[in-house]
Length: 238
Ligand code: URA
Image (cartoon, rainbow, N blue to C red; front, side, top):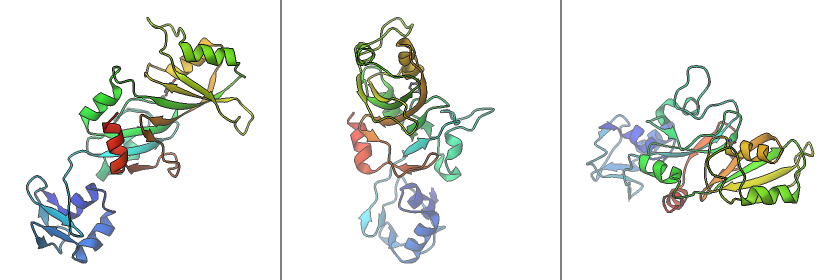
């Protein structure tokens, strides 16, 4: 059981203030009865809740797209550093954990969820979910080096890296070379180690996408938002 206003917030229908307003305006029913008090309790597993005449399908899972900033660690707790979970509002935490890790100095797309099955599927080496990284380099890179990266390089692991898709982007504001690496695997510090293998150095790293999910360009570093139904469906079909 939980309060109806909290339940509606968790379904991403609005802020606590907005949903209280919706309730006051008679837009919410529980088992066909209009609710007028935000503190009324609902049994989310048994009651039928409608919003504006539409029955809500209760989901115990939450999915957020976070724009991870630099200097934040991809963990749920850390004795010293701010974690990605610390960036969530307390009412959004709900056992969420990051799907995979980005290095502390890497920024960009991080999916946060409490859906263990989806996490498992997205991280499974058998699935090869593509991850697109924008990489700013310390040195110019030749086409021959890009080809090497594309075909797979020795980064000191048992096996070479899998074939990847690599493309050039416009130079950044400082005139540094920018490339994209689309990887089908996720080894420890993989992008940095791959660039090191061709004698270069990563100065800035940002994850742009994971499978069909693209980083929302309207998010500022540190901001997050729920996935849309379409985004979630795309990931579930990965
Ligand atoms: N590769 C890296 O080297 N670092 C990341 O954070 C992600 C991919």
